[in-house]
Image (cartoon, rainbow, N blue to C red; front, side, top):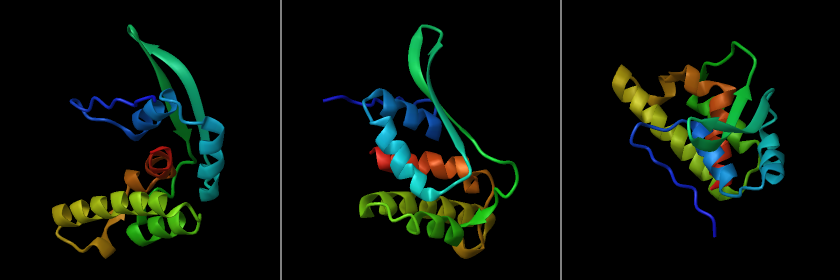
Length: 135
């Protein structure tokens, strides 16, 4: 059994989660195939890197500029139209719903009125749905 260890004492980014999962043995071809169901205009690169004395897997997502602001309903629609296994769909939706509740609270509005900026971008969809697929 392989383990993916997340040391989040200084925070963690979606690409770091994906790199850890791929380093721990996630089948990259199968993962890319499943993630392709989102039909997003993105390019995903995976490569081995060194950061000081640490070797790691780096994942980066190149997405077109603009159009990064989306509401919760649109994000959930993109996830649900993809026909992922139920646990993947539920985990992905739960992350975006939790983010929407936090944003709504901070901005004093309802979750239906929240518009995600960076979080609504394609790269964030790849990070969150990709992690749910990997897990």
